[in-house]
Image (tube, rainbow, N blue to C red; front, side):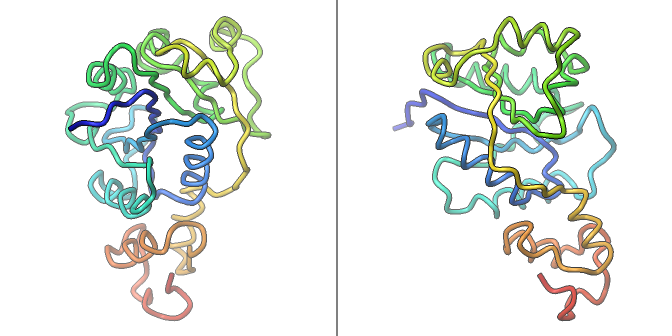
Length: 226
């Protein structure tokens, strides 16, 4: 029997690689908003950036390794199975069709992504499909002018509204700041240093085994071992 889902969140990204910042934010969001599920959706072909360092299946597998054993957090491979650029509008449309019109669906995104929302494909329609939870960052204030600021003023709501409606609200939220970035991790690996404690050990081991991010041949040494 399929589980009836009342509240589902989606966190998209390249996850190149997934790291502790992603994971801690997802856990706090699920607990704070009582999501039945929070789905990590690795992007297959990102429309707004160059090709990731790891391929789609490798990035999906790293997410699966990172989420193993954590209830309510799971990997969703749907964008890998769809040709063309990975547009969030298409993903939310699919999820809405699967979950039904009454399920509260939420798109989670960072403040930097939210500030550039007006560059996204069919961005004005996103709140018709889902709520938006914006993860605030001290170094990236929410926009105060322009079309995205107008959208925020029109749809800003309190957290409790996310379960009262299926879509349409925008809720900024402050989480525990963990200044970890995938770019930083890739640079560490390329230099032959260890990225341990910035990402799960299982993901560290996979990066080493697959020689991702130009991992040096000396990866087995004590200096480079995750």
